[in-house]
Image (cartoon, rainbow, N blue to C red; front, side, top):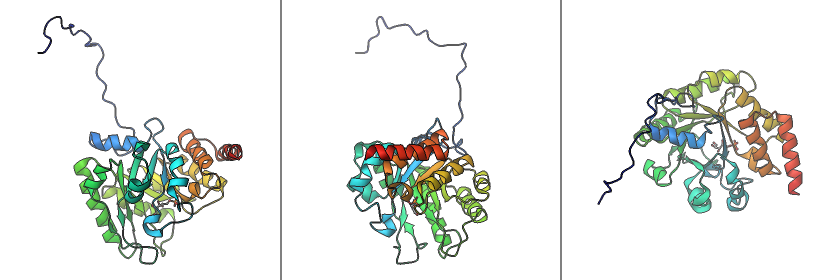
Length: 294
Ligand code: R5P
């Protein structure tokens, strides 16, 4: 029976303090539901507003690429350092410990291998399975200007519709076809189309000229894709410039796991992204940590 006698009397109503209704820290996300915001807040740090995602999903079209031959040995030790992991459900279930407690961005499109036309993708994960895996977002490739442009945009909008039903954000990845010029004009077009059609955040490449116009004209957060392996200073400089020019973080793969010292590189990138550390200092830190490991 419930205790009805000697119940402590309520008194702490703080009637002189109005309840605050804070906004949400991420660009364009103010009108989303609680679950969607909560998932986004697992990916993006509420204190810096940025994220360091580790992309290891390359195998979905490339097979066991350099640095990802043995994810259990080379990547699992890096997991604690990332804010979020971007990967396929096959690697998640087979190789990543469920105790990792990291935000997961699941690769949700696929189909063609590197031997075929890459833009000919289909949706590759059901929303129910994404929820079963407790992921924080679904990632889909969008090939603006490529042969199967409309199909990939349709893949994205189907995932956005499913995601809105369950509070699951969608990350649109702007994939550049061979014939496309990688410049600000192209990325403004691609990123804006993804945001207009409902993606909650967008991944795109950094361009040296006018990247700030790409971030300014996209009403949702942009995370910078790493691209091919560069010397460490160049990769850190690219990440630095991207966040200074409006990106809400990075989603890097090869520039981390193909580095001579992936853990040191993760630390250096994290300092650049979350603490605005300048590239030359981040490089010094990288070298110091790399030498310590030896
Ligand atoms: C490619 O389309 C995948 O989304 C990759 O995960 C991503 O672009 C790779 O990261 P990175 O280019 O930094 O190796």
